[in-house]
Amino acid sequence: MSAYTGPNASLSDEEFIEHYETYVLTEFTHEDHLRMAFAYARKGGAAAAVGGARRIQGLAERLGAPGKYHDTMTVAWARVVGHLAARSRASDFEEFLHDHPQLRNRSLMSAHYSRGLLFSPAARAQFIEPDLAPLP
Image 1 (spheres, rainbow, N blue to C red):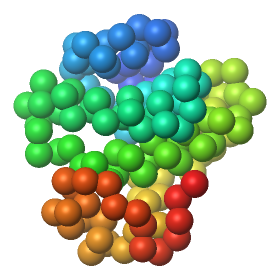
Image 2: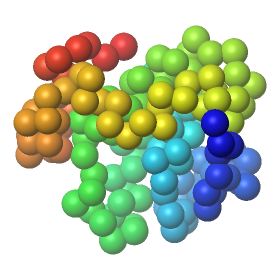
Image 3: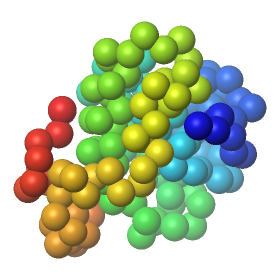
């Protein structure tokens, strides 16, 4: 499995979170979403991962894409990453990602949500529990 790469990979976790919280990132990949949830989870568990992840709405607005924010996707991914991070012995995000390669699969939530529910306007606006399989 390839290493964590991308526009923000060279930042330390502290720098990455600082740039995320101050909306100075200019790109934000799927792996960056995972890293952000992992970093918050390491500080305060799954609840911190969810709280931190919801800040992405401000980043989306800053990047000129406010319509991209999806609350159910954001919370669901943060819960999964937070759950795995709490049980992980990984020393850093790259090791965590290596230990959980399934997280690179962007359609992972299709195991938990029907397409109709996940892509509904209601799910975009607020978190909805899954209809196929529970989240951790």
